[in-house]
Length: 173
Image (tube, rainbow, N blue to C red; front, side):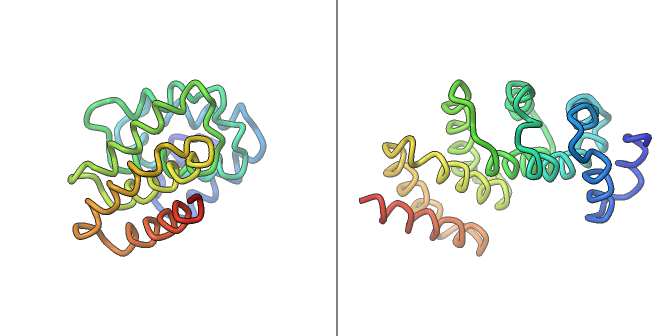
C-alpha cells in the first residue's frame, strides 16, 4: 500500500479503518505511519493522527519506542488540533513510561487551562490525568481546582469527563 496516498484518499472513519487494518500487528507498518505523522506534509500529518491513535489502541506497545518523539511533537508551535487531539486520545490508552509522566502531566494540565484549546483535547487530557491519579494522588486537588475554574466555560464533553474524574477523586478520600 502507498500509505501516504491512502491517507490523502479521504478523511473518513472507513479510511481510518483501512489503514489500521493494513497495519494489523506489524510494528514496521506502524513505524511507517508514525514517520508520516511526524514528517509528512501538513495535511498528511493531520490525517495520519487518527489511524495512529486507533492503531495504538489495538497495540499499545507500538508507541513505546516513539514516546519521546510523540511528546516532542506536541511541543512544536502551531501543530494542528487533530494532532493534539489524537495524541491525547492515544495517551489515554497506554501506560505512560515513568520518565515521561511529569511531561505528560504538564502537557495535560496546560491543555486543560488553555482557553483557546478545543474541548476534545481538554476532555482527553482529563482522562490522562485521571489515569495517573492512582500513582500520583497529590495531583487530585489541582485537578479539582482546575475543573471548578473551567466549569462555567465548557461544553457537555468536558462536563462528562470532569464529573467522572470528580467522582474518582471523591472515592479516593
